[in-house]
Image (cartoon, rainbow, N blue to C red; front, side):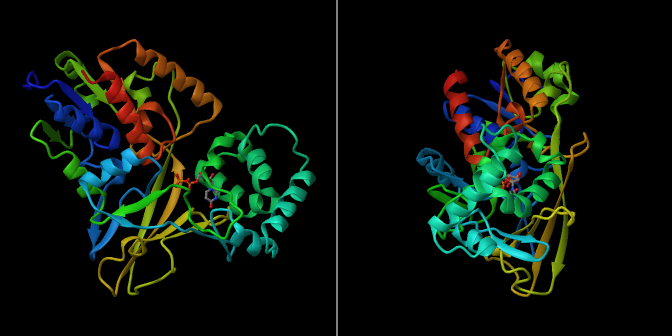
Amino acid sequence: MNNKKYDYLIVGAGFFGSVWAREAAEVGKKVLLIEKRNHIAGNMYTYSEEGITIHQYGPHIFHTDDQRVWNYVNRFTTFKNFVNQVVANYHGELYNLPFNMNTFYQMWGVKTPAEAKLKIQQQQEESQLNKEPENLEEQAIGLIGQDIYQKLIKGYTEKQWGRKTTELPPSIIKRLPVRFTFDNNYFNHQYQGIPENGYTELFENLLDHPNIDVKINTDFFEHKEEYIAEFPKIVFSGMIDQFFDYQFGRLEYRTVRFEHELVDSDNVQGNAVINYTDYETPFTRSIEWRHFDKKGNKDKSILSKEYPAEWTPEKEAYYPVNDEKNTQMVDRYLSLAEEFPQFIIGGRLGEYKYYDMDQVIVSAFESIEKYLE
Ligand code: UDP
């Protein structure tokens, strides 16, 4: 290997690694970015089939309140306006998500915010919750009451995480908005959209710089010691426990697998995302891709069903499991990382945080500000 000409080795071509690579390149640093998979763009990777854009690792809708992040991603691709509006199917009953006046009307027949608040308050009182929520179940009932918890949260969450809602942190459910207006927008952010030509193009443009070399199909761990000997700085966005040889134990992750179906129709389910919130249906979401960007063959539709599972090493890690045991373990890894100025570790897997895409970009900006020399 002739790696002497590089200032930085960057491991992983998701947002953390790719933004780092671009920013380092723009100030004149020479960067080698390696990626173990056969493509860039991490879990945002998209490809086209029948002209329909498929997100290989599940639906990614870009949303942010941060003007700087929005301007940044728009430098590298054109975004198409898309407002995510999810429908929940509980044993055949349909409800709008996130939790809003439409959901409350469908659940209870209430027609005003005051009636909805009263109903939720009654359910909270019946559940006798009067302390700070200690787990996801208590948090959910405290926010929207028993009925919605039982029909729209419990089953979905236990499938998604493979754990009881009483063993999961309250923070997970606080991702979802609760609002007393008739507004089905899944997100509260000011900016929302989908790249017009898919995420892969965004990453191609982000990494298109004379100071950046990209090598796919290249696993850092096959030559870890050589890389450490040869590169003055390593930006690592993979799994932090693997980076440190699991010396404090193995972190747990959730993964998902997809079953794809090509059908002769232009509209099978009438919406991009339907959540199956009962425990008995084995998948969590059904995605009909053409509804995201309205592109592709008009006579065909592709649907993907999403099945969550516990992560094992031959699979891709998607979600950190931020329960107490894993949180304590990752804190030890993150403190250890501080002791090595040669290593800069970040991103969803590097920090073991349930980051959205925009939050990863913000964390990359902060890391660059702090460590780019
Ligand atoms: N959730 C739920 N019912 C739903 C959708 C989400 O209970 O219909 C819970 C579930 O615990 C999930 C969390 O809310 O893990 C966050 O949902 P989000 O849609 O943000 O998950 P992601 O898109 O990141 O998988």
